[in-house]
Length: 298
Image (tube, rainbow, N blue to C red; front, side):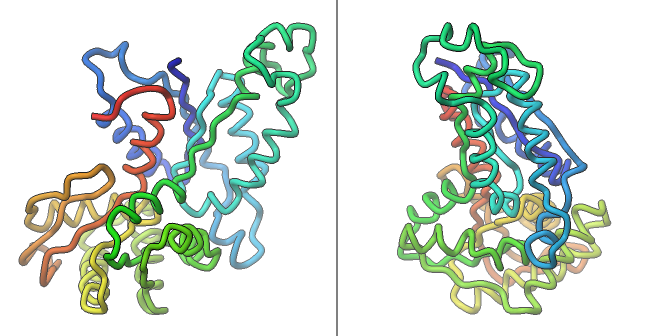
């Protein structure tokens, strides 16, 4: 059966739009009606995830739960989150779903099981929506990306992410579980990534103000043995796409989630000494969501 997709977004808005665009592009469809019915809650009120993890900032969980409630009450059955760092809170969000959507009463496909239970959801949604919530599927960007990386073994990945994601160990554990070799940026490299993410893409700054350092970081990590790069923050694929526009695009890798390489000298002071490949977790998640909803990937 075809399922309704729910995007728990807003972290940030550009990353949410990027994910939805990739879902549309990857869905095998010949008309509007053959695409996935999608509900998006771009909740920009969700507090910063990195601050919550590293410095005791306000937890994003309450607002994430509110967004999940909205998605469920609109009928969403498959839930995806276009923010790598937010996956730190995914286990707690799953627990919230299990506690609040009365999974026990909807353990079967019998939609009548909830017919008399109007308390089965805290929100004012109907009984059938409660049954849908009981069968929620959460697709993890982290797990799907680790699987995509494992296909490239024995190559070495360079893990690029926010400090929150890197400090949480989210990707390290998933990559190690899948037998993936990886390296990470040093402290200066982490500072560059945070600048690209927060002062660059999220702030809507001119790409020329942050792309040169981004390209330099990629080249330095390549010299350290990186065969490809995991763009493990949803703002980084956006920055990389800007880099490819400023650079000279060459042939792309073939499997979903792998972006084009960049080669040669670029304009605006952005340089890349040699070709490099990236895995885009946003695109990996988009492809996994298409399959989870019962559709075919182009």
